[in-house]
Length: 548
Image 1 (tube, rainbow, N blue to C red):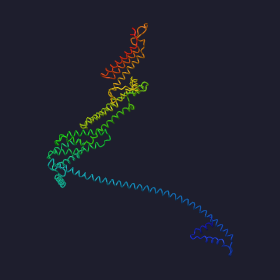
Image 2: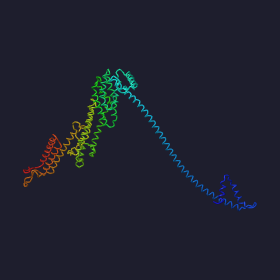
Image 3: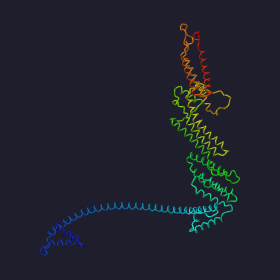
Image 4: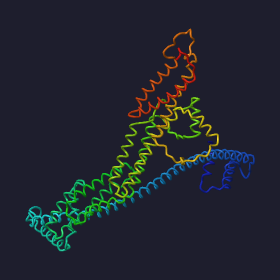
């Protein structure tokens, strides 16, 4: 920086800067060496030009500095703005977290207050119950021995005030008891349950026996008091226990098992309590039992039938899935039999690799489920509904075991058996039938026995048809009328040998597959039909002496 520029800068940075004074001082410094009043315009021009040039340079330098400073200020401003935004977001997050934390603290505080109120509401009755149990224990001891108990506050001379307080409370309680003192027995029964942690069905019989002995000694009307006592027991702890066990009915199998077990245990309990004297009403305990289970017994039959259907369907579906078999709808009669016969002739009938689709395990499982259902039905249904409910269970057994399993397997087997009446069926299907008089058979039900008979009949027809085919195709005209020069013929022709071997296998199979009189009946029918075929076959040939 030049000397003039430094001087100019000092003058320009003064607080009281005046442009006119700056020009005057510049002119004065230029003309102070001249004499008199002479003015050198060239010197002034040169001075002013140099000053203008210096000031112009200073201006440009300052413009550059200003630009750089402005750029730095903008960067600082942007950086501070970004930092400020981050601080603002952090503040917002902190405020939101603080609000959530404040709400959570308020919620926890509310729950703590509510829990405190609940604990207080539970603790006060619990304290009263403990105090009542303590007084009842002393009261029981007084009743049993007729004297103060030997232990507790009555055995310690230093706790005389506590013993007096107990005696005073027992005295007030005794004054408030009614004439028959039934309320005392009610409270005593509840105390018996509080003291015992075993099952209610194990607690009630000894509790009732002990109470009965106590009632006989104390009360003037012991039978009515015991009836009231048993009523409170059944409608109290016993009902609470049963309702808690049967509250969840989402699993029908568990629900039905619990219902059967609890009802059976309650009936046994009533039978055990029948020896306790409770009046002359012999239906008192059964009525209490019916009242406890009334809500569940009203819907028992529908729940049982729904569960039994679902269980049987699951058993069957699991079996068919294990065989990789998709159950199909089978239609029979008329045109459907004709279509199956045509498919059989062209080789399109499914034989399932010889699988019968009959399972002893499936039958046992379904029978076991129905047996358990009938057992529950016998226990849980009343006499007027027992027959109808059992009939519905048997109908479910008939549907899934007989129809869905046995009949389905028989129908599949019937499809694979050749049917030699397809031509009459075809003619009956395409030609109008003559009106016939007779009973309406449209609603006739084809039972399993009828289907088995049909299957056996078709099997016999197929067997006899095969024999007829062998004889007609293998037997030659010359077998029974040989030429005179040929001599004697064999004892048995090749066609007859094949028929004999085939019939031997049929007899062996029949004896393995059938039993009892069914073997004799099937073989007799087979013999009759074979006789007819052979007789008709022999009538078609001519014989000579050698062939005969």
